[in-house]
Amino acid sequence: MACFLVPAGEAIVTTVVQKVAQKREKSGGEKVKKTGLTWSRRLSWLNKMLWGGVILLALEHIWHGEVVPWPPFLTAMATPSEVGPMLHEMATFGSAMAAAITVIWGIMILVVELKSRAVPKVKASPAARGA
Amino acid sequence: MWLLLTALAAVITTAIWYVRAPDDKYKVGLLSLFFWGATIMWLVDHIIAYVTEGGPFLEVSLDATLLGLAVIVLALFVWEIVLVISDPKGVLRKALKG
Image 1 (spheres, each protein chain N blue to C red):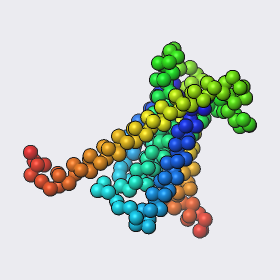
Image 2: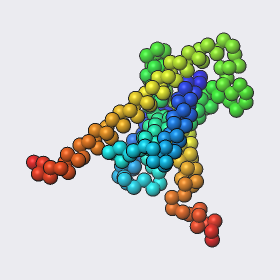
Image 3: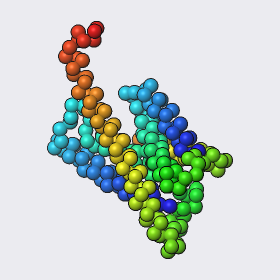
């Protein structure tokens, strides 16, 4: 019905956070981590996944007639009895979607961190390469 | 069906991105993350719907297939807009100058 609005809300917040982080990095307030990745770059991955999902899910909702280009835009809003189920769907499906994307992004960051920690070890001991 | 088609697009674009990495002049990484975002969201949606409501996990019909194709077209369209605006080859800049 309108589950994609929850990740859309998260995308708006994380986009603002990314812009703030970018400003701080430009002014030299933030240090670049070992990985060479700034927080704004990391957040950009999350934003791309969130916005991509939101845009494509919005198309699906338009396709199924759940979103229309005229007020109140969400067809469920036109019928009072459907407002409750719509909010329930947003709380369950929408929150789960947003959480899943955030968890997967967290795993991506973790993998990059672990990989970057492994790289200097290999460089420090070239003999290990032949082993 | 649109979940499957979007997942397929995500896998293909990720492979293209990896082959060309670290060079990402044409922002294939962006397209790949777009598709992955939608794939994860629909996967969660399908799992919850399957567990709570039952029925088939994937909707296999002409309408669902067309939706999957429309989703891919929209993602490609958004990616192309980003590409033209950022203009990594400088084509627009050259055209506007000369």
